[in-house]
Image: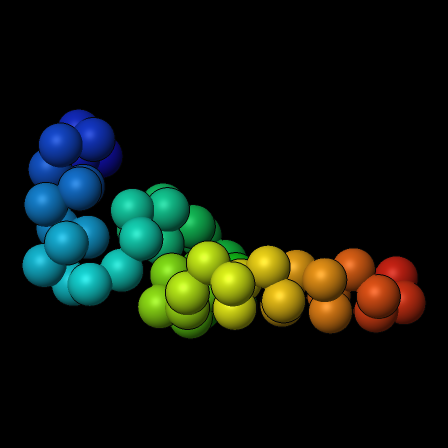
Length: 56
């Protein structure tokens, strides 16, 4: 398991959020990657939309 500084450098090279590297679920990791590429406003809009979805 890399230390945080190494993970931060790796994430920067891969252009992904650090949390992406630690997420074991592939679907959640992809969501983290996609959300990391969004603007703050886009993320807030998506959060609002997701909160309106019915629970599974």
